[in-house]
Length: 238
Image (cartoon, rainbow, N blue to C red; front, side, top):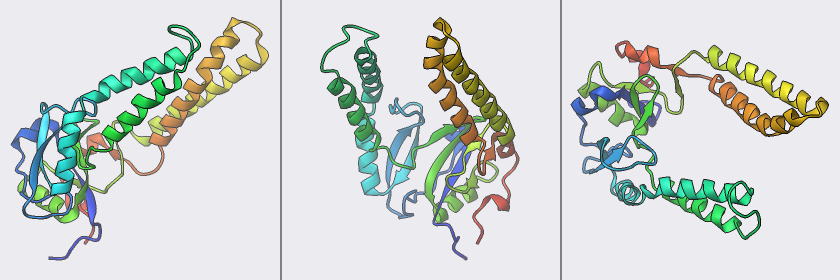
């Protein structure tokens, strides 16, 4: 059997079929035949066992995943504390003066450390009702598709799945760029309370435009295309 050129790839399957999957006893990380099984939630800040998928990992990745399952529930609390620190520091809530920098940095840094425990192979929901597992050993991915014909798809690693065609995101990005330009004009040439509102709206509109343009750039998979039966074109070229 010819080995694929790509050593890592992604597998995608309908979330509704997750309970019916036949998962081969091979570590997603390196293909070893004596993996450790760990339950991982589909959600980022709620790593509790339900809803979750039981996946095979190598011992090191499994140990990190178990630590993430224990500490992950703190992520929601840390996010709230970090946002509260930002609001207090800006004077929006409570007194405007005080040593609030640690209040902002501590939960942010701690949250980053906890998030770093999450394995790259964590199942992640994507548009269209699918679940994607990234950074899978290419040979293991082939086993997943062979054991689950018509259910599991193999996709190239890193290419995003979008609900709409790239042109839709590009048009939205251009529209928000125009809105950003209009807000800048208001800020520069209108002397009223509207200018003050424009000052705070400009970064929001600009970042939204950037996000849409990035979503419309480069290669992408469409969720609607994943509803068709898998073909050999979805697999890495031999």
